[in-house]
Image (cartoon, rainbow, N blue to C red; front, side, top):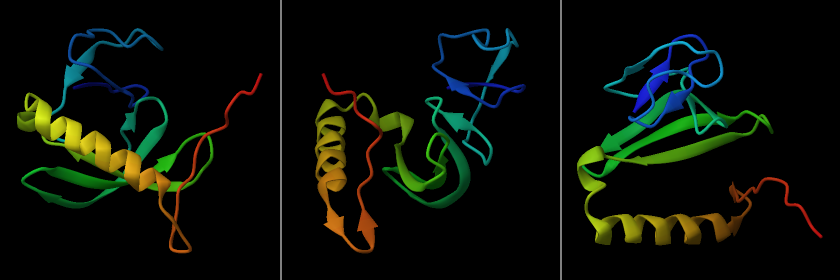
Length: 111
């Protein structure tokens, strides 16, 4: 993963220049507060980490809502079985409905 020092946005490793402001990108070893992931989540702090990855407190930029983001460790990305289970867990988690856990979705466009 690479980051732009100017806008703090992250990009995949194959990018060399920030598409937003043409600043050269550099490789980051660890995610830190202030980094913007996928153009929509600003990391606030690391909540915890383990062998499978880390969980970060983040703010959704468009809605101002706080979210927990679970990030898979790079060494597990090649394990298709693990990635599949991770995706399944994410789908189930988004469907949870509980007063202490409210699944939120972005706006949808209806035809």
